[in-house]
Length: 233
Image (cartoon, rainbow, N blue to C red; front, side, top):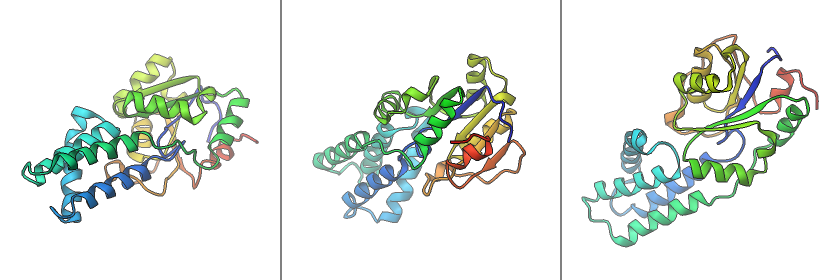
């Protein structure tokens, strides 16, 4: 892969730090809470349907996740869940928001190496503004980034708007992330470059098939990014 990018962008959740396992942990608490009302496999289906249906309204993030749990609980119980159950779900959501920011292995080393080579680094992440700002502040990584972009979604038009704002042509833009759907496919589609760094778990809504393109590569871990960009550390 070439090494002449004007901008190197990183996804945040499950690329820089742990995120998805916290959501799965929260969902398991929700399923256990509702076990006397509906079987887990059925509740899983109902909750996924609710959450995806609410994305245009709430967007991505812990707050929408919590509201979707409450909505699902009310629907599957015919509005018979107790106030205590609703309060428990709210508490699950607050616990999710307050989870510690745990960096993934190799992340800071990679960012430091790129920063020392005067590469212009940015974060492009979707989700709740306050939640993402909090995680970035608590991560200790903000010092490495030239620009932070928190968006409601990541599709071709979102990336084109960002590149226009930054005055960077697509062929000079590299996106690094763990979601083919959000970080890889739309960037390649507009003529940019991408590096896919898989994470061991992902939300099914973010899953997409592998694409074949000379504008993207897949690596086993984030440390390989430096090798492909010919950056020593």
